[in-house]
Amino acid sequence: MVSRKKLLLAAILVLAASAPAANGLAGSSQHTEPAPHEQQPATPAAQAESHEAPAGEAVAAHDEARGEVHGEAHGAGHGEESGVAHLANLVGIAAGFFHDAQGQPTAVARFLLRFLDPIFSGVTAILLLIFFARVYVRRSLYPGRWQMLAELLVGGLFRLFEIILGPEARRFAPYLGTLFLFILVNNLLGLIPLLHSSTSGINTTAALAICTFFYVQGIGIKENGLLGYLHHMAGSPRNPLEWGFSLLLFPLHVLGEFIKPLSLSLRLFGNIFGEDALVATMVVLGAGLFAGAHIPFGLPLQFPFVFLAMLTSTIQALVFALLSTVYIALMLPHEDHEEAHGH
Image (cartoon, rainbow, N blue to C red):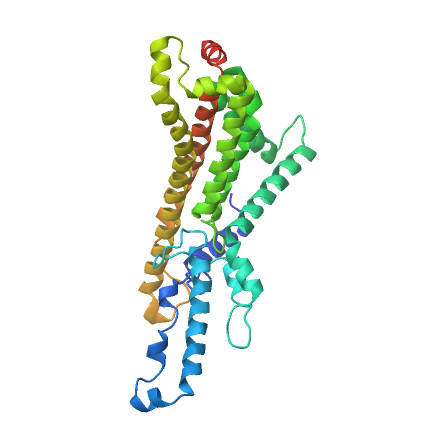
């Protein structure tokens, strides 16, 4: 049976997910304040006064600063898009408390907003570290729930990588498994009230793709040697005709290696960014239904989309890890790759 504590926790999460006060949306910079010319009266007398010019400049500077901060809060991890709803998070809310006497953001607020995605990426890394450290310290021949979950994750991922890489999977499973878990937890964090998915920002997904790019290229050079790596990039020619075509294939293969991390980063970014925007939009619609009744929470219209986002978040993490596995397999020597398939 479900305990009362679990029911209470579920009810709190439902209210928190549907409360616009707690889950306030990160506003776009285009909806912050009126333009300076709208704040200043456009009368001839006001225009003639010379002391109004410094005031207008101060208002313009204040508006520009607020726009910059809101742009960082809303677009630092989202490709600088404007007008797209996103749920607020603890870091963004905390940054709102740091402002000077003129209402402008302090250096602390700018730091928090600028490093929003790295902060939540660090939170994800800490959560994974605590989980596996706890499992390792309390490991037993009679595993509990957490140890069974860890063994299920590690064993399932290893068997999946082994299908593609064969016996070589043992060497690359630590990186690929870490990549999958890091992306998965990051994707799911954005579905929890007041948290944020750092993978909804292009900077995080690009960093993951760049790490995979250098990891794969390093494997190619290590396994094939520098000359073997260049021979592989040329299409592995064996006769004069193939060597002639290698002049065309080499630049295409090099271009393809740079396109792979680009496609990885854009695919993950686009899907997670869209999920977050969709859930936030449903929260706005649910809150709007009770706007006139002064109820502090709205109708949880986002719940069906949250479950859908959980599925797609898992799929996107799996796609990123599997494509990285395929890229590694393509870099391995052909003889080892054929032996792996034979096994």
